[in-house]
Image (tube, rainbow, N blue to C red; front, side, top):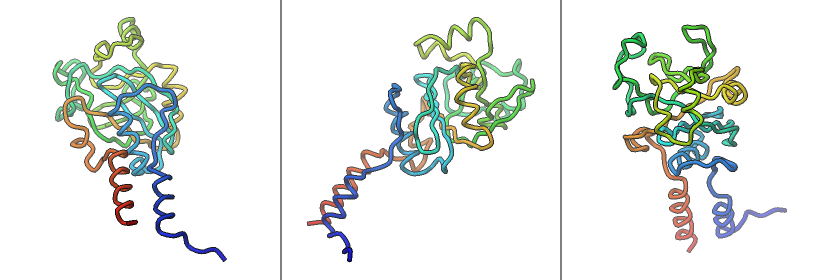
Length: 219
């Protein structure tokens, strides 16, 4: 007959198992992107759906499956204006009426899905009301050159939408959202991360506190 593990052994087993984490494989990512992705996986905030991390400061996107295993990463083009907010009524404006300071890519958590834009092209709607989507990069010489550089500043050129390399969109982004919704997390560039993602936490800090508490209770 099996017996229940002694408290000290059970505590040690929990400590060894540790928190859940996102798997970036060999992709380079900022500390903020890694911390947010780890929180998403550890907390289950993605609701068992594929998810995307957009790091505006580095102009990079990371696509993960529902379990937090990376499917791919790519450079992206973002709104030309700095800011983490959405301008009220921006989704109802014609592009020609959108002023330079209004061209922001908003930060936050968005439930996203495939759809069509006004030209009939397939896109991933991040915020439909604000007309913010992820789509293949517009094929102008300037945008194709900008998205290929290693400089984040070069990537601030859109009206707010997230421009993705066409091949990456077709092979990674589109399949992640086909037949289902996904979660898109856009990291802020001005506001604190935990102000934008209320309830988020540093997985390492929480794990350390938990292990310290378990060790204290074992004595």
